[in-house]
Length: 346
Ligand code: PHE
Image 1 (cartoon, protein in one colour):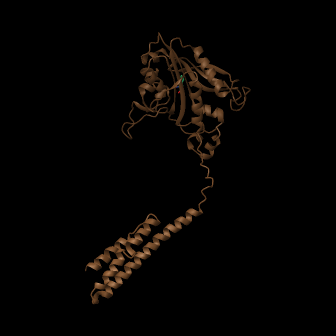
Image 2 (cartoon, protein in one colour):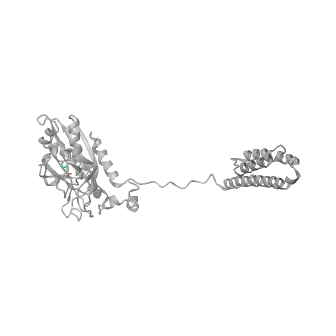
């Protein structure tokens, strides 16, 4: 029966009724319940319903009207409570402060090193952490049996999981690998700084970790001398640790530099008088350096009769220890906010 169907279809419409604001709600009320509304129209048709159906249809019509009114009131209440809540908001209140993060001490120090060397013409070079033997050792004049390649020092990447075959792919153990990449792809003059993470197969303790960070430097040009190296390192040390800092270079050995040296700075904690940090010597070692071995230049395609160069490399953790007295290396990678917050003002 047509009237019954119309009532049923309006019932479903009314149950899903939505309104975004008070105007829309009023429009709905008019649509259904006003004098010319759809529900009122159905009531008008009620006259024509045969007597025996009047009871059933009458009940349905009343139910429809009640549900429509109920739904409209429900929607109205929603708007009213929303408006009341908005009234309670104090829009003039100062917002809660946004908590600022802190720079990691290693990033702070790395950036300071980069900054100091950029002032004398060094630019940044980067390379992959997963490297091959050639760039990490081969081209850097390491003999085939050099102990640095030993599994105890270097992490090799297994080609097949669980099968420990000697492979060519490894995690770089120093960022000198970036230097070989730069020397093979660029022509002198080259003046680059190579910051980055390096990996060594060491047991983790307060004094050693299986990864740490380095900044290495390389300068290749005509007539680069050991005196140039010394001057650059003296400038760096004074900028980093203060103008009264002294340096000393002790002979050492690296396969890729000749001559090679290790550099100490006068202990910045006791000023060189001797303390527990410098073990009473007044000096602390901070980096390795030397003149690039001609074999290295040649293996990278640079004519060692025309060009010479110097290189140096330092551990960022070590420099950070000296600047901020962090005694346990593990603190750098644990990301404990109580530790990191101490660098808030740096
Ligand atoms: N690559 C060396 C290391 O990891 C550091 C170094 C760089 C030494 C350049 C000399 C010259 O210890």
